[in-house]
Length: 356
Image (tube, rainbow, N blue to C red):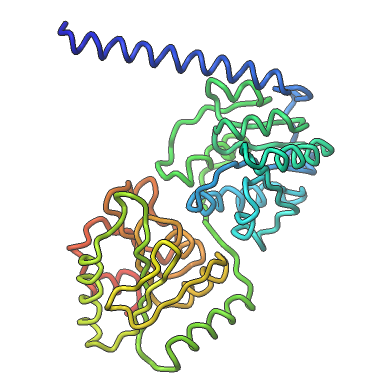
């Protein structure tokens, strides 16, 4: 064995020991702060469940939209129960409005907001939950769950979840998509067959009418087709301006120049491309979602606004240049995921979306 291979082998062995030791430390810590205290070994029947808590601590905006199918399905599976949701920050709650949740809590998990975290935990500990669900196996989710009083706690079978869960289930990874991987937990728990799962963000008629008024106020009452796009993204997911201009030129040519082009701006993308005739921005996620729902076609890279638009039922095209479509592609019924920007043909794409 060469020296390099010996070094690599030693590093792998060291990393394996480090992971195993950290697992033991985390399990011990969870046991210290509450662990499985008060858990029941008998699984409650769905009709016996009166209060459910879904725990999801995560700050990524895209992951909030990926949680929608799970929340929708839990509400469907426990129709007579009060279903509550625990998120990290207050801004995230707007994604889950109008779904039928009885309450949304915010853990404010973090060193800078530690006082808020303890306040939330004190409030939660006053309630006894029949069921707590951990759809994703995050360390912060386990800490919160250890502090909550619950009869049944369900999560996937891994090295640490057993420290807080009354029951764990083996994940076979039937689903490749990040938003659907957690659905298998519900299927096994309730012994049901896979079904159609929907990432639905529910907008009110008032929100939709307000967005229609905004769109008409922006472009006027002309009959030109509209196309909107957002250039913002993180790291390697950023699409070059020249590629955006090539894409826009294809659609301008297809419509013979009769096209309203709207660029969505944000704090990270403050200046539009030369090709943008109109611009729009809104820090309110629901208002932005409603606006994109009214625009006939929306282009975006793999970032939050894309999944926001897809969840709202907008006609959108996800441009996936580096990320895995099978894992992170749009789930909306009016969405198309594209991996080869150069191969985009305006007529074919519009036909695929049934827009012409």
